Image (cartoon, protein in one colour):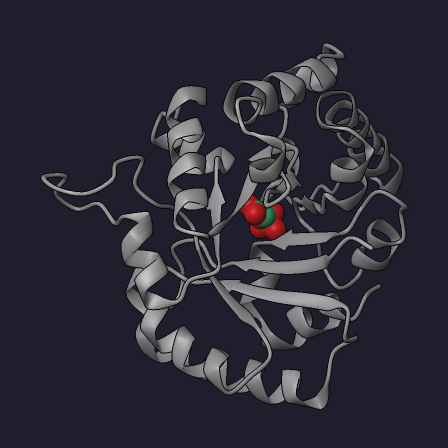
Length: 252
Ligand code: PGA
């Protein structure tokens, strides 16, 4: 059985006080219980990692980050390495989010380095892929996603790949309020699983968790999560409200 995961991507939101308030509320909700086979991940900005870890120690969620350095260590001012994250107790890292591809020009090869760094430090990459709106209009969504996965992940060994989580996030759905329909999500998730199956075999593809991201809310999560190849979500805006995020976690 592959893992069901719901991950919060806070992006660059919250002050320290707001983060603390959110975590207090979220932890008490999680104490009420979640379906035991759902793994909850919260990805704060780096600055709030320690705070989030403090809450995670007493609650049932994992902590991830939104980025890491492609470099090992040394003279890279402002960067944070995978081994630093590992030493803090971080379990997950979002890699290849479309905002990082767009605003920070992260290339396929840089993302490949980041994935390698994460795996070396036993951090699970949540590798994001997804097409732009004009690419979908041109019917290129499958080839775009295929290339993103191929270029950054296909040099991994079977063992390494077995530790990857993929998030399909159509760029036109992120932060826009326009969600992919459950059928569009299912179609792409099934395509990704099949494509991974051809490269890595059934055991790996059957166990691969593929999350959907892009304007996922408490209103639409159930329809999307009920699709056979959708194993959860990567949630942006709706993860900033404890109530709504908790509802999404319980939408399977
Ligand atoms: P959104 O963001 O839920 O606000 O659309 C999702 C994401 O970017 O991971």
